Each structure stands twice: as C-alpha cells, then as structure tokens.
Length: 346
Image: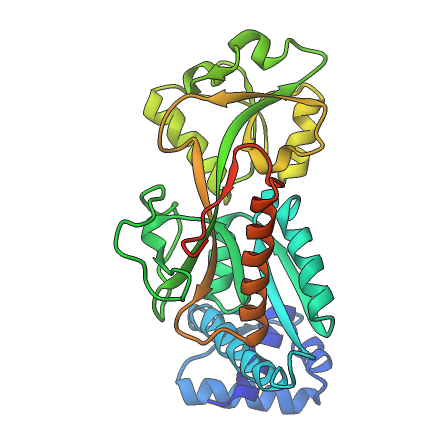
C-alpha cells in the first residue's frame, strides 16, 4: 500500500469515475486504474463496484475511506509542518467553529492572527460540534472550537497538560451517532462559559418576555412555537433533552438552518428560539428571556485538537492568539453579557 494508491483511491471515491479521477489527480487514466487495482490486490478485497458509467464503494471500500482520508491528511500536515519552519511565513490553518462562534468571536481572533501571520492560509469550517469533532478525528481540521462534552475529551490546562479529573464539567453523554477517536482521545482547552437565553421577536406577535417575564422554564417555553437547528448541533440536543427531562414535547415551528437563519426566523415572528448569548450583539429585533433551570442553561466552549499527532506551528500560534484576544477582551469588558473567559491559566 502506497500513499499514491490511497490518493488515487480517494479521487475515484469522490468523483465516482476513473476518468474524472485521473483528470483531477493529473495522471493518465490507465496508470490510475493500475494503481487502484494494485491496492485491491494488496488488500485482497475489491474496493469498487464498477458500472458502465459510474463506480460505487464496496463494503471494503467504505471501511478504507475514512482511514485513507486521515492518512493523506496527516501526510499533508507533515509537509506543511516542515514548510512552517521558516518563522510561520507559510502554512495552513484549518479551523472549525460552531455557527454561534463564527458570527461572534472567531472573526475578531482571525483578524489578529492574520495580521501577525499573513502568510498562513486560513480555512474555516462552520458546523455543529458533533460534525466538527468527526472532521477533527478524521484529520480534516487542525483545531475546532466546540461545545464541551465531558466524556469525549481529555481536558488540557494552560501548559497543555491534563487537568485534574472533574475540574471541568459538561453535559454527560455523547450525542447519538458519535464515535470515539480510533487513535486516542481529543485534547480540550476550555476558553469561554456562556449563558443560553430564549429569544423572541420585538414586533408582530406578543413578545415572549411580555408573556413569561424576565425568566422562564423550559416547560413554559415549550408551549410556544419553537425554531430549532438541524440535527448535528449540540444546542438542539440540549434543548430536546431538557424538554424530555421536564416531561414536555416542544411545538417545533421551523426545523433546520444555521444560527443566522434561526435568528432571522425569530425576528420575523415564526417562533421562539433558545440560543447562546454570544450571538445577540447587534440584534435589536430580538428580545431575551433568561432560562430557569440548572445544568443545561450554561455551556462551555473549548478549543479541541487531536492528541495522537503533534499540533502544527500554525495551530499553536492560533491557540496563543485566541487566548490572548479573549483575555484582553475580558479585561476590557468587551465580552457580551452572559459570557465569561474561563481559561485555567487566566
């Protein structure tokens, strides 16, 4: 098995056609076909079911696919790590973040990072924590800002070492469909603690806080039409779990969409939503109600990385930049209401 064979295998898997895969890999189609056949011979399994105009993965191919992606990604990371030896004048940072962070602190941190390291290419992936953790485990991301789930991570402190057990508490239990990293655990650096709030439109239907007052429990909120994110978002799972624990069934008015879409739907009076306080800056069309309850009404934001490979220098530089920007913003009172900086070294 060679790296070239895995690259050709991924090209065929992604395109579904040997001819198109050869074009993307910039190699003659017979050469690519021979290399894929050699890989199949070496493994003793057929990786593709070959049709007249299209190919599909066999069970063996589906098993190899995520492993091949990780191997190729790790090799590319090794190449970039060598290139970064020149004082971070070149390189790449692949950062994942939840939608609530992409519309708040991430842009500010990236602006400072880009000013300090203009030669580093920035690639940003936006998604729910579950999706980002999967991409991080598969080697598609260098770092990810995610919502902490206690059983998925090894928590790391200011010096990168493990924190004492129980020093950071998160929502227990992995979300449905999650899987442990094949090569080990993920490292975690807690950075922010944020409050969840209920939001409603300021015009049109009666505002939520006119009905519920300044505070409301999940049972009261569940009586109103709810706008909620698509599956894959930790916030969605937290809301539904809170409803289940309270013995209520939410009335979902709109299901799906990223954070900006959810907020816009609420502004238009389609329903109420439970969102992180981080996303409310500049949203004059929304009114807020604080949540009664414990455990689920606050959450921890953490910077996650793989522990089975060394972080790139660009990733280390971003971590330092992130902590410095958040610490400075916290000292100057620039964090939104309901958000606080909690890095252990602060």
